[in-house]
Image 1 (cartoon, helix red, strand yellow):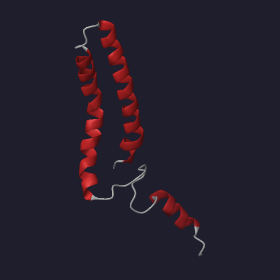
Image 2 (cartoon, one colour):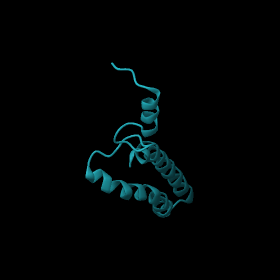
Image 3 (cartoon, helix red, strand yellow):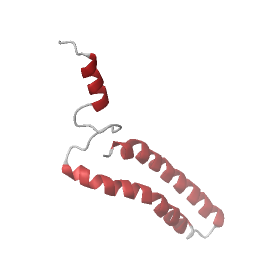
Image 4 (cartoon, rainbow, N blue to C red):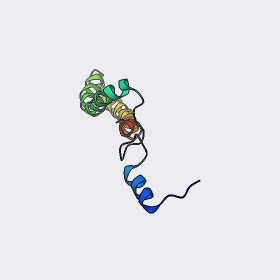
Length: 95
């Protein structure tokens, strides 16, 4: 294997791997992924607003206030776990 000069190594480290943008983990592999990525990112962000309206509205139907509150807390905890997963695993992998 041929040794690389310092200039070539500096050029590679600045440019990164071929076909990757700096800071991205995984590049989209097809055009469908590239077109859906911005839409999915917006839906992930909007899910917080949607959940903050839908979850309490569903729990408000409970006849007992304590059961309704317990239902809201459990559902919001489940949503927040799913949201953290989406942010850490999906958001940063999109272009």
